[in-house]
Image (cartoon, rainbow, N blue to C red; front, top):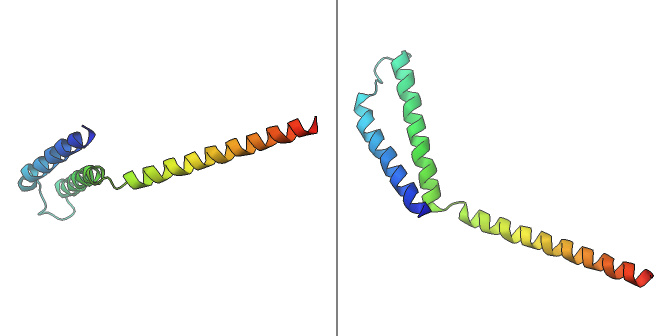
Length: 92
């Protein structure tokens, strides 16, 4: 379901981009309408890129690796605590 929403939102952003390109003003260099057009175009492309990034699952492997690292740290901490418990019991 999560991937489906990203596809829908990216499709809407691409459609909005195709609709607005002919309407944007890129003729007068340095004018306020041109600055707005460039900023709007960059923002639309960033939105499309972020949804594409999510659809391709670029962060998925990184997230899985982070989960493995966290499990290993938790296991090491448990081993450390168990070792101290044994040490404390031995001293009695």
